[in-house]
Image 1 (cartoon, rainbow, N blue to C red):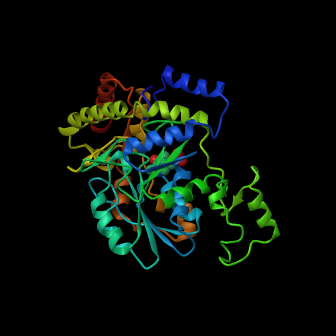
Image 2: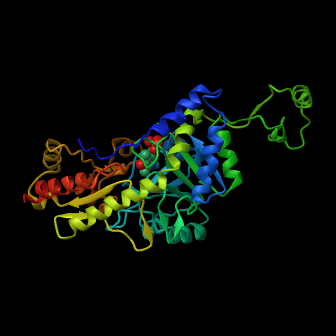
Image 3: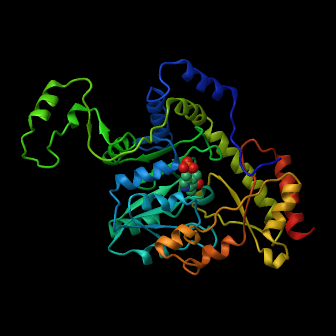
Length: 399
Ligand SMILES: *Cc1c(COP(=O)(O)O)cnc(C)c1O
């Protein structure tokens, strides 16, 4: 079976995890900060905050931005639901805007049109691993004083005009789910250059609790001039090692050390993984150049994509075969294709609670009918890529 995606775990990854299991810390030990530091250095960001999923990373970003009730967050529909859900977690409203017809990435012009006085942030999704048009998005975000967020769960190792993903937005979310470029089992991370955001996310991932005496408030936050009462005066003066303060409502979104140790070891292979994905993408592109039926998505000259997915468009109506039939035939030949993604605004949850509807994002809705994700993972051999190419051509073109 050639699956659509697969993790690459070697003996050294296993050894890194076993090493942690034999050590003193299974969670909150030295591997998490080591992983954060290495990841920040890799993408050229000042801070990295590890959490236990890409979804938690997006949620932490919304909290760092203080997005809440009454706020709007602009997001594209061709993405995993979590890109929009993160706004809903904090009581805000996702506003779905359409995508570019060639890349299926968020369309900056559509973003501009959707901005209202309530808009607080744009979540740009680097769908398939192709970076969005960050210069255009940055210009719009600065002019309207809204935050620019990158959902880079598909794009670690990608670059935009030579600048690495991880530094292109105010905050950037990554996922380390096994199907993504590098894995920690489950895991996620936010990179940012902003120390205030980084601190807010560190608090958020651990119940909103701080143990840093320099940050103890007593009652100061509520009333800056208030004299701490007897409890706070004695607690702060005593400086007991047990003392901590909860300043906000956080979650337990911590990444365990076991997972961070795996991530740290995987990170060393990111460049090699991305390089192999680029070779596979080039092989697919060359092969499908001559067919008019199997059409890979467009790649902009300013992008060096990381190729989480290799997505093609097939006009199934025109070839007279349903997508289900084509996928079934591929499956019979040992090939696992997938569809990324059902437009998020068409999900029953969003229709019911936010009144979204068909017709709202016509480019995304039309594209969705044609999408097919072909197998793409670093361990795939050239022969396997060729097997997929032949099978797809035969299944879709009947040749
Ligand atoms: C995988 C993914 C997420 C969520 O990541 P998890 O680690 O699975 O929570 C969010 N956005 C996009 C675009 C993704 O592909």
